[in-house]
Length: 166
Image (tube, rainbow, N blue to C red):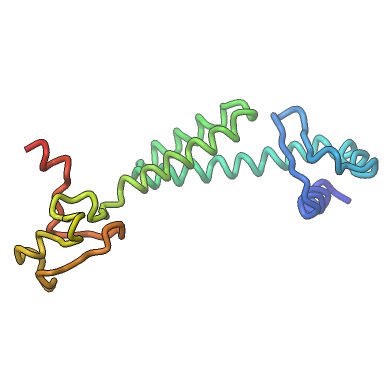
């Protein structure tokens, strides 16, 4: 059995692998049999290399998703990949998580949908929209009662913070 087949078999059995680039960690340790341990020892270097290749691919993928989220130009993407490869392998897990969080935040920032609860026109007590009542929303009845927590775009939206600051 080669390292890739061993890795796949053990993943299917519920084992998890982790490496810092030198040491290989396999868990849960309580489920490891002597046979598992022998196979792991005989393929340790190949397993570490296999995991490192997987992590590097995942790291590069996370970096490109981050670049996509912020529309970074090609030269910046190349520089980012070159820099990431210089980081110690034991930091790769943290970097992947960090970049995925940043990309997620960017996507949230790009989402311009709002809820009625964020708008000065929404009357919480009556559940009505004052912009609709004033006839400012095209195709909407004057006694419109919106779903206050549904994300949507609205031409009558006025942020509560903006209204307070004026």
